[in-house]
Image (cartoon, rainbow, N blue to C red; front, side, top):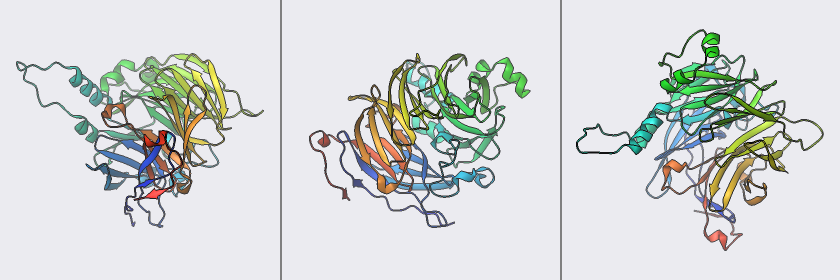
Length: 424
């Protein structure tokens, strides 16, 4: 297979009111000479990892000048035995005929619960010359021993790959009956939720044996015929009910201790994270007379829940189930991220219209937008983690043609709008 990285390109597109793309870099080509679409992006302290639609993972190193240097390109182990039919060619990362295709909702990066706990303990530990301690772990060393978790495979399992070499470490279905279609990992890195075609969600502990033992209930131990003895890298802890159709999307907030899940039947259910208790369910109003499936759910850390429906409806709710506003997004949104900046509580979305939309969460009005039409539909959006401070917060966008765009805050755009495209 002829795999290579294309030259990195830097460009400045039409400036937004608040943001502008500062850098772009392109994907490698596959054996047919086509660029594979970007499926998932994760930003680490010293590099960026990009998962492509043919289940290869490329890494790009940060350089002192703020540029990206292609580092390594690896094929995920045993991909030929387990990858989905919908990730064979460019543009097929999202199945056009089904809400249950493989996309950004099928992948997640984590350091593991044990590593995150150790970093938190070191950050709060008091130092003393009278106490001899070993050299503390850094964020960089923890990232090197992290994991890539993914689902959507033919064998209906969740699989964990190591970030050092992307070797397959383990796989488990956790008792799901049928395909596992989506997953999400919380901010603590140790708890994960999965959604299956059987209409159930399941809470997992990822590389956190103590948490897995503490959260496992009697039903899981009986149903799976085994107990969590603290040795598993991936252990299912609880089963969540509330849907009568296949799960289409899930999201998790460790800070709010909540899980939100949406189904093809158009129902959104909210459960507590650690106890798995049912809280409430609601059906967002359709944009037409016909019921619609739930496409995306997302949490904002200040207690907002954003829901996107298959009929393009976009809705904001409080975590108490009170609807604040509804808008017609005018497109199928493939990914969205809620964040807070100096401009307020924002929602960043991207989808079939090939535009990055920055909206206010309170009324869903568009505050700014960026046209990336030349790169095709937007497949994934991520933001720089707050843990990487003082690194400036950036929006990173993956497109259908394999390009990754880094959008930075543009101070000049506050006073000047409409600059023409320029390439360096």
